[in-house]
Length: 134
Image (cartoon, rainbow, N blue to C red; front, side, top):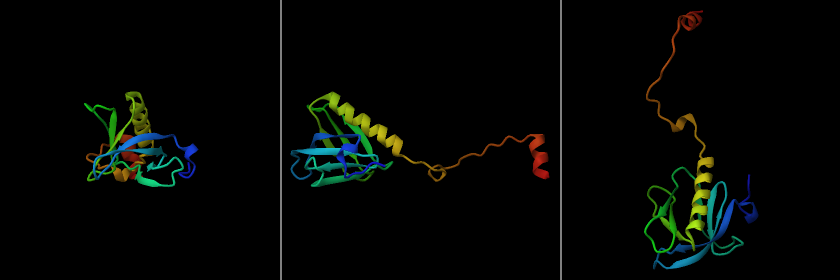
């Protein structure tokens, strides 16, 4: 397991612009991705943390189309407001987006409790039915 305290162990980290909530101004933020969370910090040492977003199945990532600068948004949960991030190039946005997607798919731990059973199919043969009677 990778430590959040060791920025060098994180799969992706770097500076992005994050849109502020109050006045809608863009602020430089250091974004670090681990296997379990996204950390948005005001510094590279990750000591002045702005936001921590746990990587859960509810987290969604979307590319924002039609914007003047390449950007994407993260929605931490179904009811949460999206958090907008911007980068200098489309390539950089694509890199971040691909890392988010790969981590989200590998972090999702599914169990049978996550599924609803609609239909149960069985193959009943004479051999199995005889075995069941024994």
